[in-house]
Image (cartoon, rainbow over all chains, first blue to last red; front, side, top):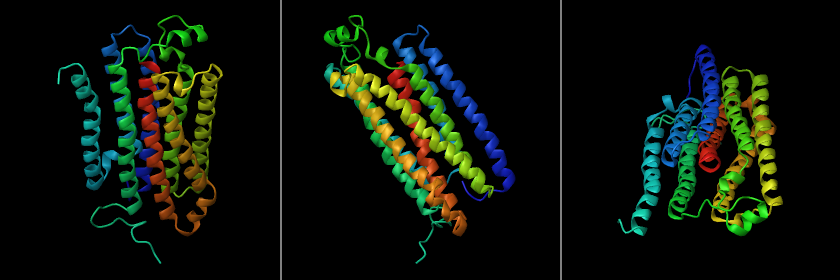
Length: 101
Length: 212
């Protein structure tokens, strides 16, 4: 994020505080949901869904990813691909150990 | 000698060099923490006893037989730490915005608060760890605790790293504002990118280890 007018920066700072409040509220929701009697699968899904949303807010607004340059998107695209491979690894590991692979 | 592209953007990337560099570094950090999360998922789904406290340790702790490790973690303290880190993220980005608005005094205030939050996070973490150690709970006590100490310990090391960099930018490093204000603003921006990443990792660590 570069080259802004003073008014644009002032608008941005208002956005930062809105996101801050949203992150606090979502953290409270995360803890509250953990006390509900959800199935293990649903509990993981809801907790990670909220965490992804919070992560998106931090990356998009605080790290200015919403308005970044192509070069950074290219780096992150590669990162996402490798990250997905890392997270799929355990699934294949499970298949192998249970004879499903 | 003038180092090129530490203020102006390179024509080919559209970014000043430090920003491209820090994003490449953060990409490698995603892989580092990604590998640990991946191992955690593999261990947790692969071992049916991963979350269960062994009989002899449960007896020592006064916990019921078959109690889970997650019940031994301090959720209120971790919740407080989450709030502290989120607040530090907003103070960090406000310190950068203050420099963009040419308000050095506000920068000092927001960056100082960021550093206080980082210190606060470490104090809370130390209280949490010392409570575990006082109950003879160590990384060697079980696979879950090994994962817990590895992931939260590595994250805490990142907080310490951020505190050192942000402390420098708040203190002696801030002299650059008088001579090269734009370059200093860029330094604060890239330090902020790292700091937000540290916050982002904790956003995933907190539910994964403490709540699930």
